[in-house]
Length: 615
Ligand code: FE
Ligand code: ZN
Picture (cartoon, rainbow, N blue to C red):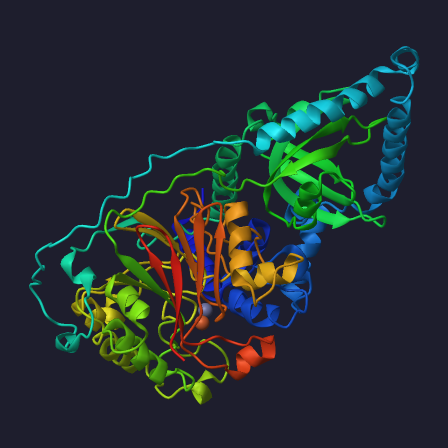
């Protein structure tokens, strides 16, 4: 049994690391708790780890080894000598030696397949004579496979009831509001603001606020990974053909070549020297080697294989070959799938002709906040700016979602004070309140925090504390956490600041900062908002995984990249809302050319998107 004091130290440590945006493996946490003064040592590790080049916000025993500290080194030495199982569990198994033998195995497999292909030109009789059992399996599998692929890509998978769009309501009596705290400019409308005639219909379907503090036990890490695995597995199971999947432990009992289906999280993927993809797939029962040949067909499988990253849930169908003489077996993948969303999902839509405007990254308080563009946005909302069509669009806006980085914050990055015109966080919120008070009062504002807000950096984040948002609450602003799932007039929007987008753009070929909607599509395909664990994205060790996309939204809204982008994936409207901030030196260093002043507006009855250009 642990003493309560130990639990307090643990909880304190985990919070300290989480606040610094650093994840710890359970083994590293154990080691830190074993030192004489864990709190002091924790501080030192937070400080020193950032100077290690290969450190990516994830403390492992390997990283601790690189920290110059005698006490840590002597504990590590003790672990090596007396607890080798800890060391082994902490890092990925070294598979480099296995890869050597693999190239040969792949060539053998290819030769076998080629033999069978040329065999198919022979008469049926000749074929039968020369075939072994294994070859039998191999020759049948091509036909079976193409049938399966056809089936897997067919639809529908999950079908939801679709709310039929009704006729636009006419002559609805205008609604009177009790409080008139907002919209001092309401009297000067030069358009017909039909949104005025409808009541707000907002539901917060999922909000991490108040539910994401860790118990302080390092078991939270296990719980998080287990929860992620189970949730993603349940989503994958809905794919046609996935019900045949077997646990990895069952494969190990096979002693002849067998067609198999398995699903699991990728635990280490690399390309062999000939360009094939070799990985370890893990489920709750064990690990399995999988090889995807570089010329896997059809091309969509090749594309999927190229974009695979660690910690991702995939489904593999292929041929399992048991290892000879005590060696581990391997699956030669023939089909590879990510979870994705069903092709014919029907979204519930609004019955009323209303819209939502999607904003993020105003960075109020920053020298580069473009207040002129904001003023123009206010003019647009009031019908004082834009074409006839744009005025009509403005008149339908019933909701505004602000998806993070509303303020620039303080102490977010070194020397930030040089870039601030308002260097007091409370004053930044005062300014925000005055900016938002110009929004017509019939428009409901929803505010969810990003990485610049005064809240922890690791996702998921709770709503901003009332001590900052009192004025906003008085204006009727709904403050929620991030990510969150909200429903406005029947339409579900997944609101996620987008912290992981930069990581993914670096890792996955074909993804780039200039096309944020493509990266967002990839998140939907993975059904996870931060599919890779332990890069720059800071993920808090909560016991539940809030980042799994288990409900399919009609609108998927991100920000963070400061580049506007619209896209669509299987009916989901993808929106990156750009920003209201000019290029900062920090962005310049990333080569990001922001697109301030482009406001996306999406119709809730049709999901039609518009870009309002304020410049
Ligand atoms: Fe931002
Ligand atoms: Zn951001």
